[in-house]
Image (cartoon, rainbow, N blue to C red):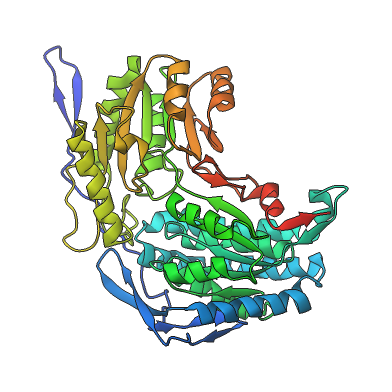
Length: 495
């Protein structure tokens, strides 16, 4: 609400009342059909785990149990891999690309038709705001299936003058930050190129992968072509080390990626690894500052910092630093932290208690290192795992909060004077996954993109993804590319 008053020179002045709040606008949970217990999806059917053990998956926004999920052991992994091998040898690799494409397209349509249910389950299980699940995760997942369905019968055009042969059985391990999207990201190109799959979702967010298993079953995909097994680190290790797996595709932490590299060294297994990141977001003085600030907010806070490519390091040219900092502080005060199912919520729940503790550990480290902290004054819910959006200024380049991946809504801010200086600072990290550049000059953008060691560099935007574009990193951010035409290469042998 705005009121008017007159100043001394008799001009009108607007005054805004910011004490009001949005009325709650929760998405209904009733559409989400979540079973009390889930078994493993092997050879086209849900089967009990050999251990008969289950683990709980909870809603991080209220700490309530959503379901109990089967804990797969090495015996279950072996069953899944053997089912995938049989399906590969007898059915899938022999099927024409045109027919494979029909199945993938059918899965895409069914995901699309049940988009609202997927979005609600993703938010309940992962804690991300319903707006993000609804408007980005689920549509982009469906788009990946659509995109690769189109490639299934066109591999001779993807690889001209070469014959593309499938690799075999792909073992795929995905993280908790984009459960459905990462599943689509990995399953779709593998199927399009004639491979079969054993997928392991993160133990804290297995529900949308299991819902996808239901769709795969309804789509009449031949049994064993896609198998989905649930469990923690031991399950993933059994999948990586299984001799019947021909390819490992992993998205997750750099530390686990190094373990996988050591495990498959000396074998014939192929691998693509999409690991950690510490993305630099760079604002030049000629940038559209309001747009840039909104891009920074989108790059780190709207996703709770839960993406490997989150723009967690901000570099601002000295001449506009004070203006940008003021705008950022004003903007984070308007962010709503709360119930992820509420359509007004900007920042939902942190995925787990363990991850929240990690974020708090780094916030404490930042203060101990002498950085100046600013947090939003918003109230946090009394239950669940929540963190206020946090800014750190006066950050040293060597600071741990500027060098190590936090995976939370924490932004470090530094200044620079010249292009060469900021390029050196941006590249001075073990990671090389993504970056963002904000400027009015196209020539400056091209200069930056040629010198920055990052797999993806966004210009005057951030966190934009498309199924047609490859994604991956350098250095400790992994190797290989997923998405686009490049994503097909990871699942074929070229003859």
